[in-house]
Length: 146
Image (cartoon, rainbow, N blue to C red; front, side, top):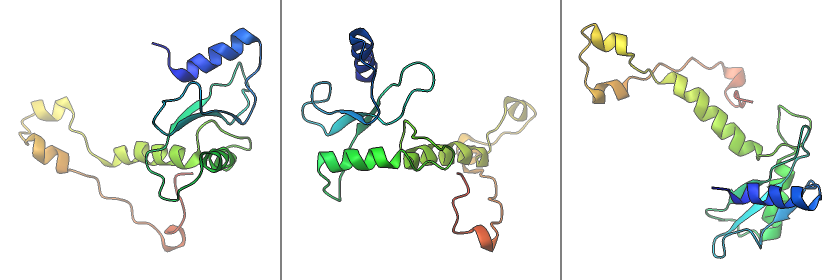
């Protein structure tokens, strides 16, 4: 099944038109009642760029669609790891990175431990969490996952 992002990419390839940076699609290929849009915020270094599909779940600031799309595009230029614009907004990328790293603090029981006579229940296994490292005072207010 082809997603809308791939469909937009396919249309651009067939028409011979390159997908330009800051291209926003928010009418034809989007859901008729939901607040979603496609944004191509980056230039493809190799091959063609693929637009990112954004869904707005709740807008407590009451942005207009255009203002939110401009903000989303501008945020794509703020990634700490890249000097160019990126395809996904850095706050979402950093949240994914923090969640990925957090899973290493959760201890998983291996099958070897269970077969060696360790008879902890599943409920007890899920409660086992590694102790977080002590954070020094000079980095307590700094994002450590950049």
